[in-house]
Image 1 (cartoon, rainbow, N blue to C red):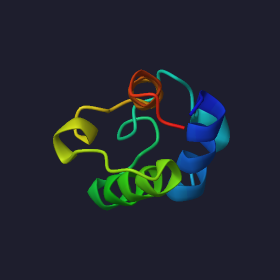
Image 2: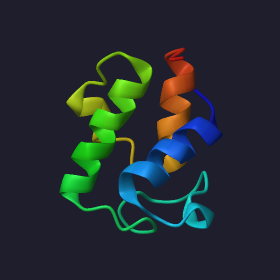
Image 3: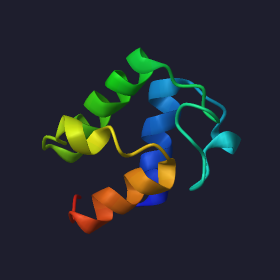
Image 4: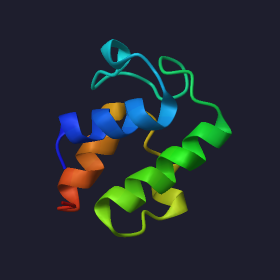
Length: 77
């Protein structure tokens, strides 16, 4: 899954301005996601990739770039 795929999921899930979604953007600070938003994003990512992302892993993915890197490293669609 590449940056553009992840960006689309983030914009659709969080309803944020797509111009704010950059590799360095913090999910909570820059994109203003609260805890409920993060749970919804977690579920949307799992739906998109068709597999589970462990809670302890998703908790560490605090920027868009870290999400993309995790998905690439784990060779997710």
